[in-house]
Length: 194
Image 1: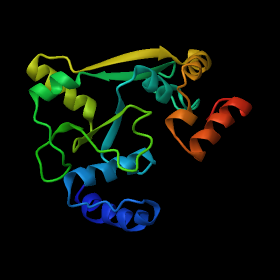
Image 2: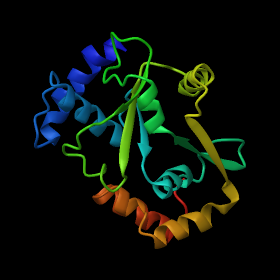
Image 3: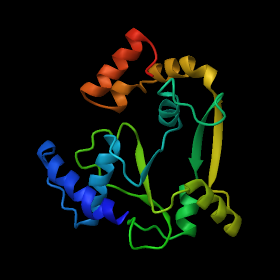
């Protein structure tokens, strides 16, 4: 993790600064979080985990790719997290290094991140490898339930994606720009995105 923070992020910052109008000041925790969040939303590996406030947006991401299946292979799994109770029970740390093991909600600014608002995005930051096991341990310790799952049949993918499209939840709306528009058109004209 230290190599990621001390080497990878500065190098990504150096290279990607030419692609952004904003110069991210990585020593400022809010701007550093915004930079990590921007990277995450564009496919760069980070210790962040994406969440959404919308169950419909979560369904879009769960069903987005025809060949990616979570759960038992017949179902798609959506996780629901009780953020309010978690934040009451545990301190929220905004760092992934030089802190005790934690799973925290990151309130990242959406600087240059046009995807954050339509995705109703929220992120978590952690230094834990197995988040599910960690949360399960904390549930046992506290007696509170923080994480629930909803399994939906993968066989309903086409219908779910059609209904989400009618609601305006599409690649074009969630990924403003050329990439999202092309993904949406690909799905419309050539079938499900694999």
